[in-house]
Length: 349
Image (cartoon, rainbow, N blue to C red; front, side, top):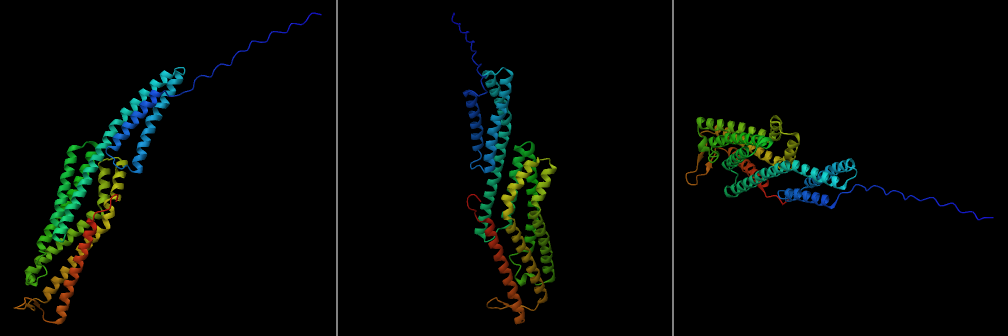
């Protein structure tokens, strides 16, 4: 019986290779790395010690520079039949467009940091000048404070001329704020000059009703100007925020400015207001002294040899001495508060 011939084996068809997956070529990675490095280096050129918030901004920018071109590159790759070259070109073109779109904002941000540096330098110089006045004269003179406000107004005027858009509106707002403060300070200086603090507690300078009336008017002006200065300090941040809103500055810029204010000037506010409180106390004591001078008009004299004040009764002498002691105590308290306000802060604070 003939042997059966085995049936030929069916031809085997190898399984087709899967299409290549989406990957970015080395050139795309290099281009992304170069763009990211340039943006980060630019940011670090004006952010010496970036905060966590600023670091997050750099990371976010790097993610945007990668994510948006990658999505576009994947779409182009699929649409072109999985062409690696088309995907690469889509990534590079989109990366260039995204980078070009971010360059103006990066330049504006650098300009804003420059503006902030100018203001920070102004604040440092102002504090140094006021501290020098305190060390030299034993008191922060009104003239020194007035010069600081005038200098600040001039600085913001320069920023108004140098900026456009929101930055100019911010500079205009701060220029107006400083001008308001300067006007209040000038009112206070005029009242202090009229009160003639150097001779006020010499009873000879209050010997007549007309002399006392002139001093009383000056003290009333001093009370009013001090109240205006307190209001300027207490409502300053609210005024600035409202003015920036009126000038249509973006809410994000306003939020950042108010956060900077809270981290800086606001921490000095309790001390600044306490100094205003000592001014109020001094005016009150001066009014008491005026009343004392009026009550004892013509009843006091000075020792011919020593020049010491001679009052008619021990009770009057005790009252006089107590008033002078209170004035000295409040003056010393004000001096200590001024030293606290102007004391150099540790680095990083």
